[in-house]
Length: 209
Length: 293
Image: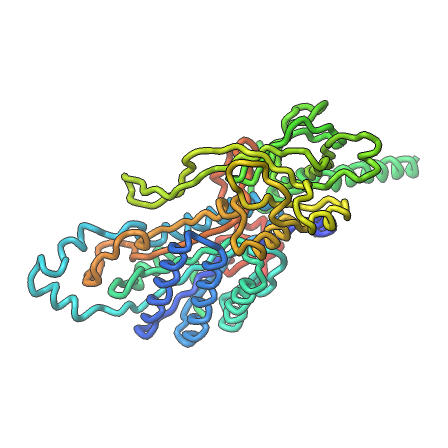
């Protein structure tokens, strides 16, 4: 395997690192992050998935996460090194699908219709004024980068390693080495909740940091 | 006797290692076998970015075509089997003056999975332009980009339409070229960007026009999931204790090149096992050599 690696390097093949990072934050104070995350996805859609724009949004999210580092609770990461671009593309797609099935892909319309303000009575009015702040927030990044990224190719279930990794993501954007970016987060918006049970059930790989 | 045996074994080993190192596809097949217990039909052809003749050599060029939706070149080569060669990884160079004086025509030299076109100045590459339009899918309500129609045109990368081209062409070394901005009617002259790698050419194009070339832009597939696309349901949504998942949103985009459909192996359901990361328990035992915990 090591010989193969040297051969690939010798013949100038591009090395791709595809990896996914989970970061779970806990505490009601992390709610402002939801605004940053939603803004990021809206801007990315408005730019029709332009990688440059998505990279800038990734930088915003990483910087925000670095500021909230005292609320980091658990984390996980996984990834692989590939020499074939097509294989890397397949892996990136696969990770998107896997990340997306960890939360409700469709908003629960049946429930939200019942509680439209104006249609129902006092109960929902009260609910409108007292929104539950979520106790948990999970952010999932998937990136595909070129070259060797030693900060990401390690076990990130450690606060310092995670800080280095988030900084590395920011740097990768400015170095123009990112070829694929995905940002997922759960819950979707202020007022939705991610309970501890849901966390355990859908994110079994998280390790306390 | 023993000496002869040793000689035989050593020469066999030498042969074996030479072949093992020689074919990169065999090597990657070995790699996957190490990391995952692949079914016995394992040595599938690697999903590569091109398809066509595997024997290297120089072939005279009958016709070349470029599709700006995928960035794919289709070459029709004389004297090769099969005659059609499709690739996205193509370098181009102008014929040198010596070759021109010798009366040489445009040709393609193929070396493994690397192709280089040597073109005369007036060679026209067929250019298929895809007119795209954002349409709303009536069933899902999502906006998607669809190809409305195709226009065909031609592109002459080495026709000296501007001064800079002459200088760049004087180097004659094969490089990667990106076609110029499309305009309907009339031959496309010159190039939009060039570089020593495909990404270098794309960057060159981007710095000139402040937008990625059409082929790259089309490759940036935006994927979204969750609540992003749907009109935001009122923020008075109650706690959802009934479901086992919370809400969430995701957005992703990549410009990695996908393999051609026909070269993609049929088994796509294989779940990769990560080679690094924090999840030590989910990893297969056979991949444990690279464990870092």
